[in-house]
Image 1 (cartoon, rainbow, N blue to C red):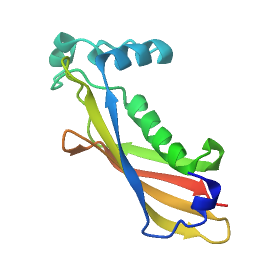
Image 2: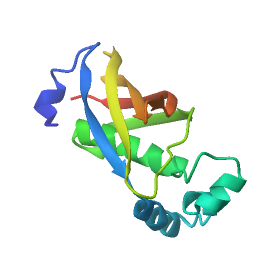
Image 3: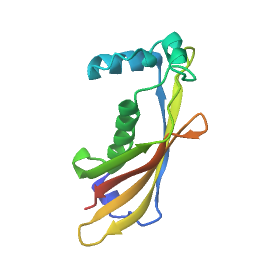
Image 4: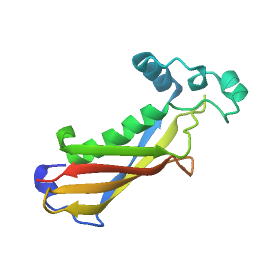
Length: 141
């Protein structure tokens, strides 16, 4: 988003929804980069032994995708001054197709003194909310 567009941000304004696919390959790549080789992120057998409904995405991966959603909207990662997430559900990643996480957001408030907008972020996958309470503070021009 261009900085000039950020001048148009109003309380109640909505961020366009974005679908982000996550594949098993993404999980393996993330595990290597993050140093998190927990087999619940790639083995159906181990995930089942752990009582999970299937292989699940790393929480920090979904959180990172949410941060990317906000920074893409803001147009500059330097504008994001805070980011908080509570997880409520896991993203199950099937072997035969990507899981899809849909991110959307709404401007909850704008601090006129600091020019920081508080964005409430919603993340869902397979009909379930995966973030219970997620917010980002974005500095407006």
